[in-house]
Structure formats: C-alpha cells, structure tokens
Amino acid sequence: MEKPEQSQPSGHLLVVGGGDTPAGVQARFLELAGGRGAARIAVFPMASTEFDEEANEVIADFQRLGAETELFAVSSDESESEELLRRMDGYTGFWFIGGDQLRLASSLRGSRILDILQQRYMDGAVIGGTSAGASVMSGMMLTGRLKVPGDAEEAEILNIARGVMDLSIGFGFISGAIVDQHFMGRARYNRLISAVLDHPLMLGVGIDEETALLVRPDGNWEVLGNNYVKIFDAYRAQVIDDDGPMAKASDIRMHVLPEGSVFNARSRKVSFPDP
Image (cartoon, rainbow, N blue to C red; front, side):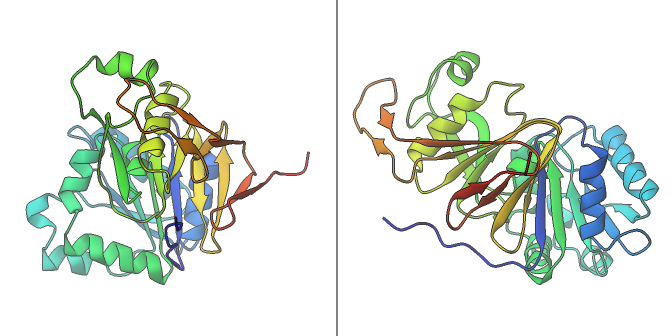
C-alpha cells in the first residue's frame, strides 16, 4: 500500500480552525504574503450567505497590518470572468472566510479562477482560510453530512462507524489529508476518525478554534495559535471490515500538537518546541 504523493508547491497554506483568528496568525499570513506595504490580499466570502460583517472585519484586520486588501465575492457564473481573472493579477495572498464548505467549493471548483489560485500557490503565493475556508483546502473534504439516515448529532458525538461520513471534492491545496475544524469545541473526533478509517491513506487533521496549521513548502506542517492540532494516522492501522454498526480498528496513531510543534508530512514524525 503506497502513501499518496505529495505535491511540491513553493507557496504556503495557512488554515485556521475557526473562532477568532489570533493576531499572530494574521501577522504570519501577511508576512508570507510580502509584509507591510507589499502584501496584496484577496478575500473570498462565498462560504457564507451573510458575509458582510465577517468579511469587513477580515479586510480591516489585514489593512491595519499594512496590506492592500480587496473583496472578491465570486458567483459560479462569474468564476470564468476575464475581468475577474485580470483583477487577480498581482495579489500575493488569498483568504477564504467561514460558512458552508459545500457552498464555497461549488462556487469555484472546476473554474479558471481555482486553476489560477492553484498555479499561484505552486509559484509561491500564500493561501489561507478559516472554518469552512479550512476544510475546503483538502482534496477530500468533509461535508458535515451523513451518508446514511440517522440522528446527525448522535452520530457526530457518540459513534465511530465506517461508511457513514459524506466526503466531497475540495480545492486540493493540501494532499493526503482530510481537514476538520472547530475540532475540540464541537467534539468532532468521531467524525474525523470515521473518515480516516474509510480512507486510511489520508491523514486526519483536526484544528481547534483560534489555532492554525501552516503547511510549508518544505513538507513540514507548523502549528500556530492558542490550542491544538490533532493528527490521526491510520496508515498502519488494522481495520476490520465487517457489517457491524460500530467501527473496529487498532494501532491508529494520534498526535496532539500545541503551538510551535512541527509535523513532517513525508516522514510522519513530530518535533515539539523547546520547553
């Protein structure tokens, strides 16, 4: 069984688990986008139907840090617009706010704008997002829906089961992983473990609120912010295939990573900050 291939972008990906984005995380994003006076950041609000307040706050935050910032509210009908594509020239950072990841994915998936964003990422731009804007960054994306009928709250909190979590196609900026957000606050361990048991080649990445994962071009993932990133690795796990309602598995690895921790996605090894 082979591990999924890792792409080699020159850019950085910064994904936040929701809640208030810490000032230090915003500052790191701005630094990667070129720094004060040079960074130009495009903000995409399409995950939400009521995005004015959050989008305006994000724009104001980046502007206070010294970035030129513009809102790109793109509908699926506009995603092929030549005018919009030209407006994206010169931007060094691209930020996606929260809401519904399915709504966000459907607005750009398969579009020329997403193709350009992916190429810019390969060439060195920084891509970021929070909440739904984090989940959508993986190639396989948790939708929050169930494949089978049942009580969604009970399934999310109580049950680990195979074949129940619905996944869709995300943007693919991070390969070999499934990203979940609001992880500790919304008790999402079970749905992410269920997804990883269905797809054991994929790492499960659960990001707490006020916490971020920075995916660096050297293959290392760095934890920023106030809480934890949890990584679930079922690559060498023993997973029992049967028709029972509950999952059966052993030897799943879990990493609990506070700020300053670094996870090497190629070797799957962790290094912690000095005390």
